[in-house]
Image 1 (cartoon, rainbow, N blue to C red):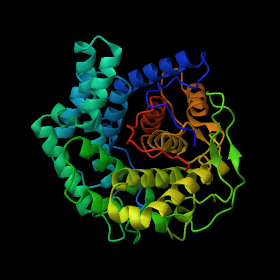
Image 2 (cartoon, rainbow, N blue to C red):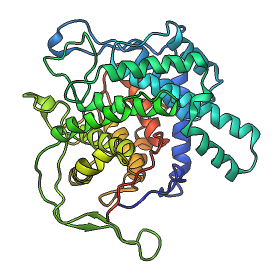
Image 3 (cartoon, rainbow, N blue to C red):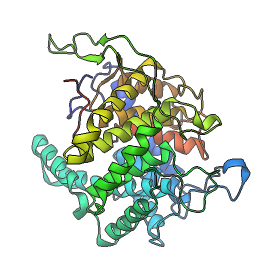
Length: 411
């Protein structure tokens, strides 16, 4: 894979005329989200159905608010903005842990974004030289705990503990206790969000004492969840990518397109391999590699299998490449799929998936799809579709994911 420049801005690799359109889209999208905040500081309840209609509907009020706060902070809305302070006041009212893994994970991501926003604001106010400012931000973001209050850190710690306790015996996660889940104890989407939350928690000084054991256990679930076989692909080479001689193998002879389903082994549509879940599974493997790459047990028995899983996941995304739908799922949750590609690209440090510059192509799709008032809505998301789609679009355009220091490379 072609390595991404770690200092790249969101406009790199994009045609010059598209860059200002991206910047304007981010500005308008964030402004629209701010207008949708309710008097209590939230952005609504949402009504997500449970399987078969059993039990109460899933109403992720905290999760929706956290996702919006995460997207706004990543879109350069200052942490002192009244919308941000009001939103976090809503999240902190009880100081409790939500009952669901999605909400808990996104809340941790929101607190991480709050700390990163405070770092950025301090750097901007106190450091004039751009190079020194970047160095300060890079060093500070790895240990962001001091940028949260003790109360905020304690809240994050409770949420990290909740996620660790609710890992399934097989190593994955589902929605959480007391959710109607037709017998399934884990899914690839929940697992991805939990791992992202645990990584953010680690940056915030709440690394759980069993951190590496948790990720080792997750690898077992992920290896079993990925397709056991897939079509072997022909070797591909990306042409000259900038240095006059850099030709990187994107797919090697024998790489197999092996994807991930939402629920491994499910007898219904949730057991079907799709693009958003293949991105989620591939991201999860990359996160496990980042945490475990110096662990003796990982290096001895799991590294080769994990690398193969990452390459084959990328091969699946290349083989089924499209930005007009969620491959295998049609128009369902298209922007969740795009946000998945963003995480694959940033966390894997890859500019290309196959021969596709994923960011340039995705950014063009999103700026063209934005509504005149600044929001996005595919009508294919869980409720509220317009708010969630807008968050995913902004997170893609801002390359919001924090790198973890690993790269998808060929020997």
